[in-house]
Length: 58
Image (cartoon, helix red, strand yellow):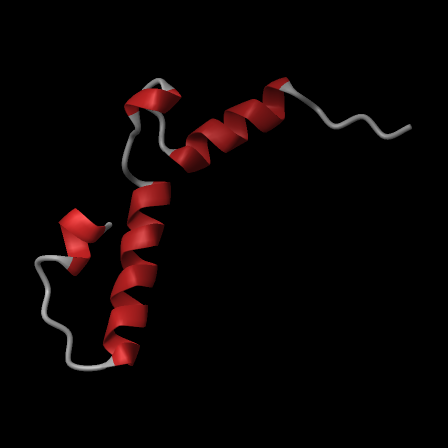
């Protein structure tokens, strides 16, 4: 985040930082594939994991 957003932007207010960080985090976790997750997005990986590891209530 620091290298991709915070180090290259100049912010005028704390609110602007909060909005841009929230947008960046959403993009990073929803749309960007990660090599550590077999090129799936974190959201896709979580969905696949939930399908393959159903929760069992005792």
